Length: 336
Image (cartoon, rainbow, N blue to C red):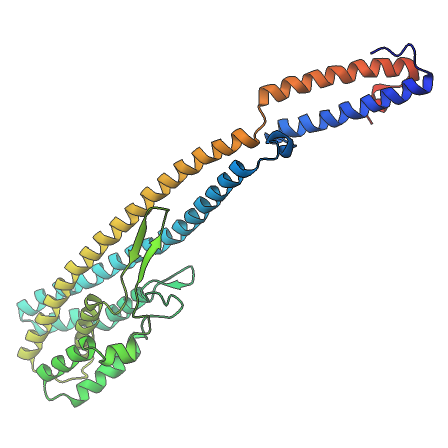
């Protein structure tokens, strides 16, 4: 820099202008080194934001799918937990009833039967499970509880018991009440949707279904058998001992059969869990690739930035020496 032909005022103005430019460059490079991103992106891409906008859209879609999968994973995990709990409740009770009925010891059978009401309440509670404020077994109507309370169900069953002639008539009525289309269960108990959750997108390529609802025939059968056991346990319907043993043996066999259906449901739910996990891994990989591509556009090379920053610092120091000679400034005053 040759300032020999400039006046003192001209030299001062020239030094100030160059100093301001170097300070601006210093701030830009410091920001790029700190954030890792180009500060003047418009200049860097020469006004062509098309590729970057495409990447941003793709990344936003991936983020949306990831958020949806996170919610679904919680719900599917809740389904699996509920099914496992139901299986435990149903399987142990079914085998206990059959074993006690085989022994032909009334006291033992009554002792096992005493838990019927509590187990029914547990199953209803499992089917009314909520995750993040959403009912899991209500189909698309996730804001509505799928079942009324077990106490309300038993009020209706007790009404059937009062009108039954014997245990055979009672079990026939209860079966129809739970299983028939338009029967008591559908009109008085089930409050969810007729439509299951299906075609839920978990990625650009894959969708899953959540078909389980509290009105599934398996759940109806479980509630039916537990309702019969509860009515007998509470003495709502009088049953001779031999007929009682036979009726409870049938209840036990029905519950064990339902256990197998619950195991199949858990298997299918496990497949859904695996699909979600695989989609999540694939989504993370794709997100990483696109993020790298975006960084190539928006990112500042740390080595180049550091080199440029060092060069600017050297120029500032040189300019300071010149300024100090003409103005007798201190470095702290100059950089202020």
